[in-house]
Image (cartoon, rainbow over all chains, first blue to last red; front, top):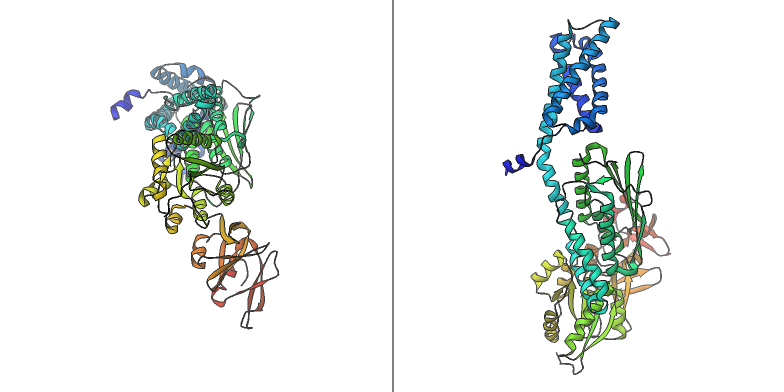
Amino acid sequence: MASINQNMHRDALPDFRNFGVMVRIVLIVLGLSSLAALAQAQAWGGMLDRLVRVSAAVQPALMLSLLALWAASGWLRRLPYVEGIVAIVLTELLVAAAVYQAAQALAAGNPYTGLESYWLFSLVATGTVLYYFHLRSRALSPALTEARLQALQARIRPHFLFNSINAVLSLIRQDPKRAEGALEDMADLFRVLMADNRDLCSLEREVELTRQYLSLEQLRLGERLRVEWHTEKMPVDALIPPLVLQPLVENAVYHGVEPCSEPGLVSINAYKVREEVHLVLRNSYRKQGNHHSGNKMALANIRERLVLHFDAEASLRTTVTDDAYQVHIVIPYRTQPR
Amino acid sequence: MTRPAHALRIAIADDEAPARSRIRDLLEDCAASMALDVAGEASNGRELIDLLQRTPADVALLDIRMPEMDGIEAAQHLRKLPDAPAVIFTTAYDSYALKAFELHAVDYLVKPIRLRRLYDALARVRSITPLPLDVLRDLAPEPRKHLSVQERGRIALVPVDRILFMRAELKYVTIRTLEGEHLLEESLTRLEQEFRDRFVRIHRSCLVARDYIDRFERGADETGEAGWVVVLRGIEERLPVSRRQQHVMKEFGRL
């Protein structure tokens, strides 16, 4: 089993434009600076003083590196892993040399004897960061494989499956044309559900899938289900994890529309603000004593997959008011798979 | 049980129109080899009870998950009808109910329903013995939304969220709504258990709806001794709080 996972795992450089990645780099380098200061001071007392001196050299280098990596991120991603590593190490040595030159020029108290110490620290820091991300991607890679399984777990409820088949059966005698359409929608829906859902898919496809799902629900619920789409400002090419919208809409129908005799509304709003894609789902909801745990499971599952794909840059918020339930997802706008 | 000479009268309750029409189609198929009549259709439990009071039926095909009143609650109220129909539950998928049905050998059909299974269920329906009420109660995962009372030969459904208080009196429980009073043949202890979230016991013989409690006042109890009474929104009547139950007042910010 382990070998299969390793074979499937391809080493890749971290995404230097991801906020979570940057935070981790900063933390690691700060940790290393503290260690270096501690080693030089040889006693707790002088550590703070040393730390200030070390930081004076490390902070500019760190900021410069982050900037350089951010700028080169697109180019680095296209390189094979090993060449990417070499490029990063060279960049870092260059940055260290530049900071050294600047420090010399300013003649502001030089904490080390020479360029070698700058390079040594730079190499150690770069090595640690890259090794950390290597281990982390190793650790997460089974999780990414798992994402596929989890997507399956966020699958359509059996309740929906059997009721839909039942509705289609009822149409066969009275309205064979509609029955055909409904079966085609079901086939498309299950094709996606059974596909390999590890990779991101276009928002347009997810919206289309959700529409097909809703047209099946409309068949069963008729007037009771009202749907509003606001997709005029939708970035059709944005990439999102598959099965993010559909399970949420299914929740909305199951908890918001089905328990009421009166018509219930589901509204879906997709738009882009700056470099973020927003998905807002609202449904009418009558607060009742019973809370279904199924709802929380689907939400936890989607949240987990958002973290796997986007780390800290995606978010999912839910809001409950007296008569409405809202889920708001924010995903960084991306059109290229990583 | 005497065998009725007339055709088998069937009532259908399901909140989804296509599901009802599917059952109608299947019943038409059954009609080829069995005398049957569709008594009517309902889209939830409450409608079904209204329907059955106008048009009695021998069998109710009862969906479990329906808005307003689900099938299992409807089956409990149906028992009070003078000529209660036999109940066959239908469900697409409900792991909780199905487990319970197996346990208690309850008649049920899974959707999509097969013609053969529907036919067999209808063929043996006249020999079905009604389920004991406590089994039906065990099947219900949540409290009833209505209480049913028999009045002048009919069943009246009283929504639980309209009830101000319930008081045990001799062999009945009186339930009080803003509109009036009804007599219920159930035990107060059972009601307390079932509606724990909604009602609080303020006296050995009295449960009060939390939502309707306005305030607590100093007053006299039935023996004339000084004590606390509860004032409910919308009615004049004051209800005494027994010494033993005074701790519930803490919950509402008194004492």
